[in-house]
Image (cartoon, rainbow, N blue to C red):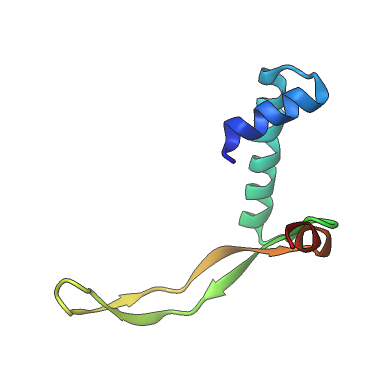
Length: 90
């Protein structure tokens, strides 16, 4: 399912306009992104938790040349599924 399919499903279920649902979804995703950028954790009870973690700096190899390259440490987003979502997928 992509974003447009999700919007269409919400429109069908709620009867709201496609434009409104698109704006609400964009706002929600933007809010989650901003919270993660600040280092906050975003939790939807039963669905899951979005958070960030830090990957350590490391050495890697360029597969084409074999040359060693250094990858700096960085923050990456993580998602942990909640119990209700895990049970739904079983």
